Amino acid sequence: MTKLAQTLGLTETQNEILATVRRFVEKEIIPNAPEFEKSDTYPQAIVDHMKDMGLFGLMIPEEYGGLGESLLTYALCVEELARGWMSISGVLNTHFIVAYMLRQHGTEAQKQRFLPRMATGETRGAFSMSEPELGSDVAAIRTRATRTDDGNYTIDGQKMWLTNGGTSTLVAVLVRTDEGADKPHRNLTAFLVEKPVGYGEVAPGLTIPGKIDKLGYKGIDTTELIFDGYVANADDILGEAPGQGFFQMMDGIEVGRVNVSARACGVGIRAFELAVRYAQQRQTFGKPIAEHQAIAFQLAEMATKVEAAHLMMVNAARLKDSGERNDVAAGMAKYLASEFCSEVTEQSFRIHGGYGYSKEYEIERLMRDAPFLLIGEGTSEIQKNIISKRLLAEYRI
Ligand SMILES: Cc1cc2nc3c(=O)[nH]c(=O)nc-3n(C[C@H](O)[C@H](O)[C@H](O)COP(=O)(O)OP(=O)(O)OC[C@H]3O[C@@H](n4cnc5c(N)ncnc54)[C@H](O)[C@@H]3O)c2cc1C
Image (cartoon, rainbow, N blue to C red; front, side):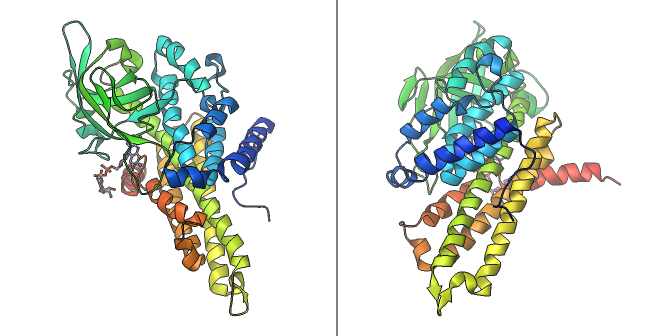
């Protein structure tokens, strides 16, 4: 057999990109992650290197300065990066969603304004829907943009859980505009808010209070975002189309789900690799623990889960690349990959015995990182809602 999580049918260019990212992960990320993670320090040197590699422009069309690669290429790169350290893939994730939404829904002027700078990583995207009172129930958003007589908008309200909140310079924010539509979803609008890097009142009426202290997913900044009389122009609305924000953000989330499944695949692969190595080194009762059937069977289960998650993720990416809608495939991939990642990580942790509980061992970090994948881009329950609704429509009697 070959190693796990191989992908058939890749082009030479895709294989070259992946080989470069894999080398980068081995050389720069795996050895340095523990230091950044322990001190919860932003991995600036790694991010700078990713800029040089063109990773921030991977899916941005060539005409705007990017590499014009497919969702599959992107997802496979994310899988590699997350294998090294999940937080690094998080630096790319929100940027990639915002660039994708601009590409799909932005006006030509907005694409010209943002995409070339996003391709180099000079402008970095963040994506904001959640609020203190809501995450799954997006239509309940309270942050409000009120149109003023001069045609601008004043935004007031509080956003929560903004990944890359302090380090980004362009935030796609979903807010309530209530401009008369009868359906709640049609009263939501996506604004493109430019801001400087940093914390505190970064622009008049716009405050990033500071980093939220998290269980895992360290290094990367997750913040709140407070609007208090912040003034936005009408041409800061994505696609200059008020009332379309919900659909635009859901489109972004759909590719985001492929991305989260790729991250879960990467963390799962790493958890498996750590377990299969440790199981051959650790001896009990006169032989390596891998020779006890209970452990060997766990390795077999873990490998099967890693393989299944990878295949579902690749399928969801390829479906989107073919131009088809992939909401169900992405929901299934996200659900399965994140649940399997959690299981595989715990199995690896158990195989490590007491050492798995020590911060000296990498699996300890994976145990704290993996749970986020069950939540980000929609919890497992939300994925099951999406999947079951579509199933019942398709199989209606
Ligand atoms: C580290 C981190 C980073 C994040 N980054 C971002 C970001 O960059 N941008 C952003 O907008 N958000 C971000 N989020 C927020 C994330 O998307 C939400 O936490 C997630 O969508 C869940 O929402 P919630 O926390 O409000 O939970 P709730 O929606 O309150 O759900 C609580 C529980 O109820 C369940 N539940 C809810 N509704 C239903 C239902 N209809 N049926 C069955 N069960 C249900 C959920 O599955 C969950 O188990 C981040 C979160 C974390 C932890």
